Length: 221
Image 1 (tube, rainbow, N blue to C red):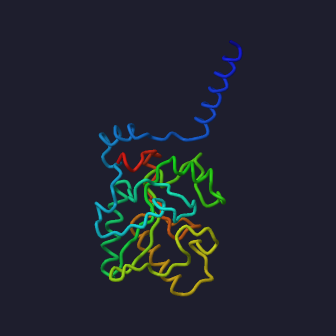
Image 2 (tube, rainbow, N blue to C red):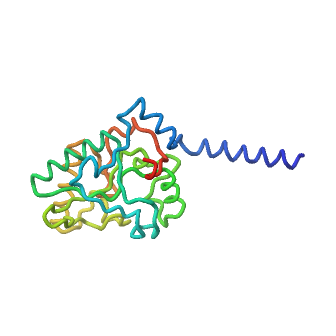
Image 3 (cartoon, rainbow, N blue to C red):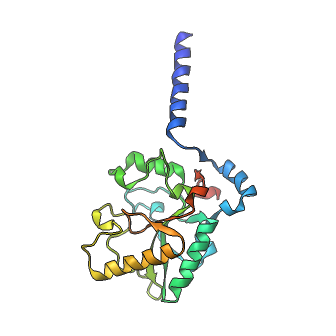
């Protein structure tokens, strides 16, 4: 009896500790209920909202820093206001014969937990204690492409390169890379995004605080 009571108390302590360590995260069912009263918080599939946008969802392949498939489906989502802002950016870039390529958008919270647990360098991944803007559907990883050729503009590093050269202000680069990086930053900031200092490809939507952390798999969206 004492042993059983000890195990029960231990389990309770672990549960309380976990609840204190991690923020509240909405499940698929809670999210479904929320968007009934707050439709503006809906996760929109980016390619359905903006058909001309290209995708290269690395986490649906083994071609990523984890070296394994993290998403069951090669899809990209963002909250409704974020998708609307991306649509305006795509329209503006198209006037120059350019467009966006999305590497990642909304990321289920469980994936962020895996990243932090298994990444070799946790300085480049979000701490689950606070969650990621990706978990809120308010962050996008992206680059610019030439619409005619489909080729990416030359940037300082490949996507998800964990090096100093990936920094938004790193200066020891060819002029064309600095120019392309500045173009991406300029058009994104014009439409309400902020660039992550350590990653030229990562942008957070300025209204992210209004959106909760989510743990909804793509297949349930």
